[in-house]
Length: 148
Image (cartoon, rainbow, N blue to C red; front, side, top):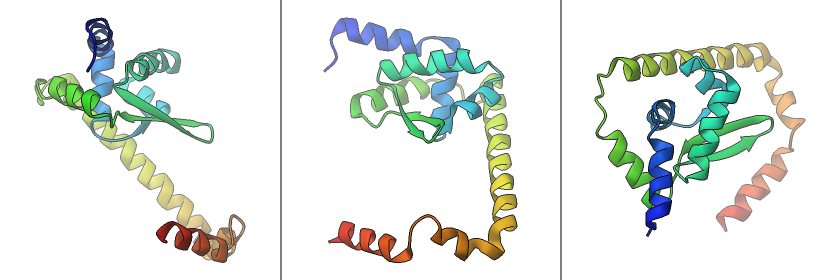
């Protein structure tokens, strides 16, 4: 259970225009800061500040992969239920939310095109490149140990 003061802070973090848009976007799946800045057409410092506040409130989670930071809605039951409750009251046809989803779709298409271009470029050398990272035997042993 969340005490009164904590709940007020959580609601304050969600109750801001850009942060509510961020929550709606993250309901569509995990996104990077770069993706979010592109979709919202806002600066990286501004988006990062909003993401920090949402993370501190427990509504979203952050994880890093190398130099990239990725965000998603929290899996914590109470936070997830609150976010779903809030987002469930938004009009799906709101012009700004529709535009955000369209820009999200464009960002995803761009990711897919870049990945396809990359793999087309390295396809002929893929088996050799793959062995530079981890030998097949090590990967297979690791998988087996996780399954046992």
